[in-house]
Image: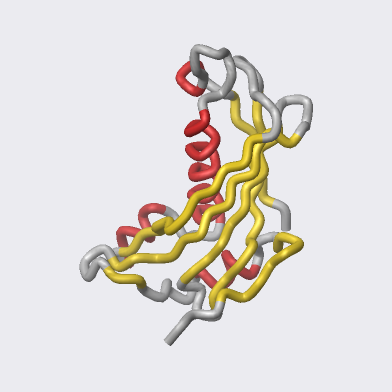
Length: 147
């Protein structure tokens, strides 16, 4: 299933060169992840209930086309990798400008952390549907965890 969100960009997203500042792309990608989690009943309130949160190990952004002041953007989410226990995940976001041109690709590698123990943890069962429903990237792979 395809998941995407269209945003009206804001003044604070832009730099003196009159194009979107580099970190704004990543902010929108993070918002799409949180909205995706919430769509599958795994909202910020559930993070609190289970005392866990998503963390990132890496975040890589590749810029393709400028986004200009006042443009709307669309950001999608695809699953690029997942461990068998749903503990670790790789998500790729594509950011499109108002004309529908690919403007950036953002790849994140993350996991769930227990906020008390400050250690990686396996998420609750209810995340299974969330990950099972995610559109798979063409290069999707199972993430093998080392013992």
